Amino acid sequence: MQKNVGGIGRSVRVVVGLVLIVLTLTDTIGVWGWIGVLPLATGLLGSCPWYPLLGINTCPMKKAQ
Image 1 (cartoon, rainbow, N blue to C red):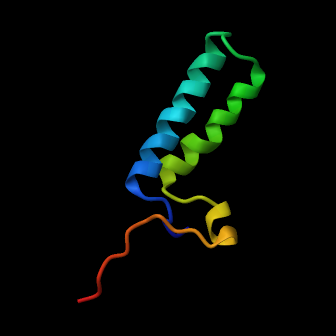
Image 2: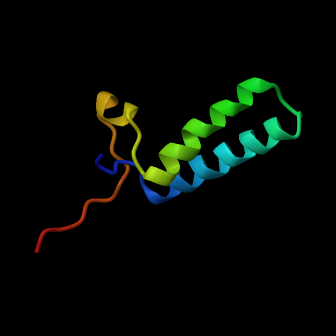
């Protein structure tokens, strides 16, 4: 899997995922909060399966030397 999510996007995804999971575990929100697993996983892996379909890549490119 190729990385296609940049640093800020990864951080935001991890935080949002963790917040949703914690809110679900504390019964603040319903079962739908487990959807937080998706942004958490994509943030940790640095790859979003939707980005190639949409032609998006926020990961900075390394220059070839």
